[in-house]
Amino acid sequence: MKKQNWCIKSLELLLVAWSMQMAQVKEVILVTGGAGYIGSHVAYQLVQRGCRVIILDMFVHNQPFNHSWATVVRGDCGDRATLDTVFEKYHIDAVMHFAAFAYVGESVQDPAKYYVNNVTNTITLLNAMRAHGVKKIIFSSTCAVYGIPLQLPLVETHQRCPVNPYGNTKLSIELLLNDFAVAYGMQFVAFRYFNAAGGDAQNGLWEWHVPETHIIPLALRAAMNGKSFTVFGNDYATSDGTCIRDYLHVHDIAQAHVLALDYLKKGGASDFFNLGTGRGYSVKEILDMVETVCGKKIKRITGNRRAGDPAILVADATKARNILGWRPAFSDLQPLITAAYEAERARRACGNDF
Ligand SMILES: NC(=O)c1ccc[n+]([C@@H]2O[C@H](COP(=O)([O-])OP(=O)(O)OC[C@H]3O[C@@H](n4cnc5c(N)ncnc54)[C@H](O)[C@@H]3O)[C@@H](O)[C@H]2O)c1
Image 1 (cartoon, rainbow, N blue to C red):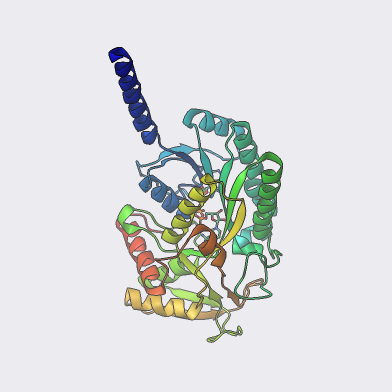
Image 2: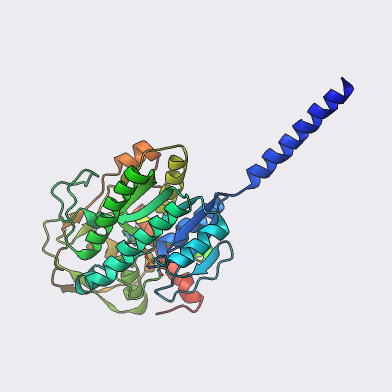
């Protein structure tokens, strides 16, 4: 009897030790494009949540990335041999796929470049996932899949009718994901981001696109460098004639990704979600706020409208709120632009100026 008790006790101790070890096993997330703007912020938040992050990035902007909290693999996510090595070596649990080309204008001039990097390379990634038994993927789509809005705010069921090759490549991937989920049991969340903005100066994370085309960093640089800023059209049917967009802090985007991972882990159904605040700001309101935050005036020039630019793009993000429990918390205009300004100053302080 004594011996039996001793055996049970030992077994219990072994079980406790085993479960403690299991609790320490980190979830491993492959973040393609994780050295880029949004991917790096999401990767950092995943690490804060206890995940191990493997970044696969080919550094198209030649951006510096000196963070030790992630394992960085320099390479192309369309290269099957690299993917096989990464999946085998790191035992990946899930993938977050940010890697893409994302310049609308360039996609019109060179659509082949966009279809190869965005679509063909995603097929290679998805096939590698299948081969290595990885089922979960969170994908960076865009509001550009909607094209010209027929109703506002945009809901996920709005018609998808992109007006440029960039939007077409993202819509193609959405269709692919859907088919792969049905046929191969993959689980996905595709986020249709509206306009990402802000940064994380404290942790050395910021926007780094070469060339930069996004309004907030361009307006900040115009204010800080005393350069002019061109407003593309001031005769739209909006309150002040300039275009209205829905801006979202990268911290809020990162939070949505963490929630989506939990959602998929609990067996949530594959789905598409808008990520936006539902509150739009005009180009003029952005410039006014940049001036307030920087304490400097911007020389404004009025240019022509850009082809395919809708007057207003604003998200209805009710679905992300109801299903994922996502609430944007950092995206009010003043704190958002202040965060972007601080990130811009921190980047310059590191000697990284354009
Ligand atoms: N920034 C936005 O406002 C916004 C809006 C909607 C959608 N998106 C989407 O979000 C994603 C991230 O956008 P971002 O602004 O962070 O872009 P980014 O250019 O800063 O980051 C993309 C990263 O992917 C890498 N990359 C590109 N192709 C690759 C490949 N084949 N293999 C490995 N790495 C590769 C680049 O080197 C870069 O570091 C993109 O898919 C973009 O289409 C962005």
